[in-house]
Image (tube, rainbow, N blue to C red):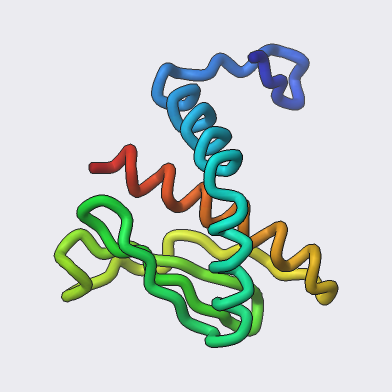
Length: 113
């Protein structure tokens, strides 16, 4: 797949970029129902911990949106916030954005370790 930057020249994806995109798409497709459940839980509880392989992803709500961080030591320490997803005022849009954030963060955690 070619992506173009503002100059009209194609941006060449690396193999790592393509691996991330493929994994993100697969996780989104395979886990959409689970992600929707997680999104509803996060919106209700405001904090959510999700174990993934040998890591734990922590999601929380801030005034600006939903943030996440990762722990690779069974939750003893977490990284600084790795991403912030702005949330829309409409519940359906908030859930869709959180579903994408869950797929993105799980793909990132999976490929890092």
